[in-house]
Length: 117
Image (cartoon, rainbow, N blue to C red; front, side, top):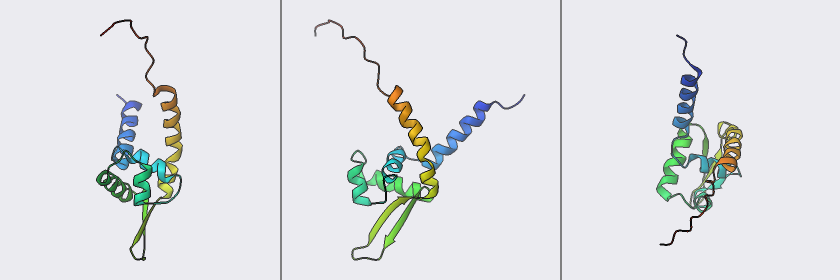
């Protein structure tokens, strides 16, 4: 019996999720696609992410080669985050996900019933 393509596809999807890690990774990648950002700017632009979650997400993405962290020897030290080539290459997948979300992301409107409370 030959392995089905579903197994291969699931395995590939698991690999992607392992690399991207945290649930906020997609949002961070989308923000950094707009250009390099310092931590506090990224925190403001991704207002739904808590400080510790953003820190954890950036560390994970850096460890997996998606995000580059550059430290500049200023006083105080300046740290800037940007996408690596690997991270930038993920933009095509994000655009496809955005198309899917625009088509299917909104729940279907249901007719309101005339029930009173």
